[in-house]
Length: 125
Image (cartoon, rainbow, N blue to C red; front, side):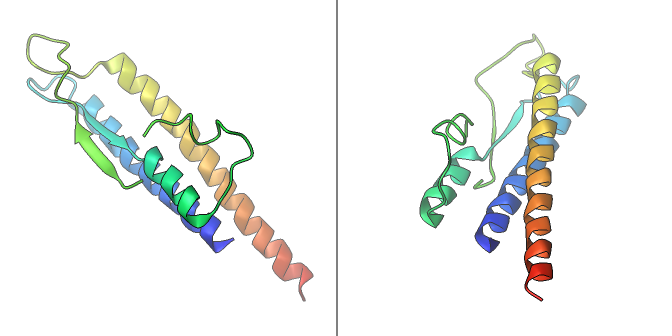
């Protein structure tokens, strides 16, 4: 179970960093020349699953996610406006909502893991 909690901690950390990047993008929506920051961590999570021998119950559970090595990059290739800023506020708001749901799901699973530990300790007495 500690491996699972470590894995979930990594997922929470990655999601938190993604949230910071999205909020920064939104805050810099009107900054000329600002380039959108992106945090991609799901590939590293997948690698952790493989290394630790964890298994998914369905082939799309982790693979459907895009990209925790806390890899953050700046998206230079796109340009939406004349001022050089490439932040699309609609995309950022959608990403923020999606990330909030993801973070809440992981938080719920962390709570469930600790509840299982508490139950095991209570039954072990």
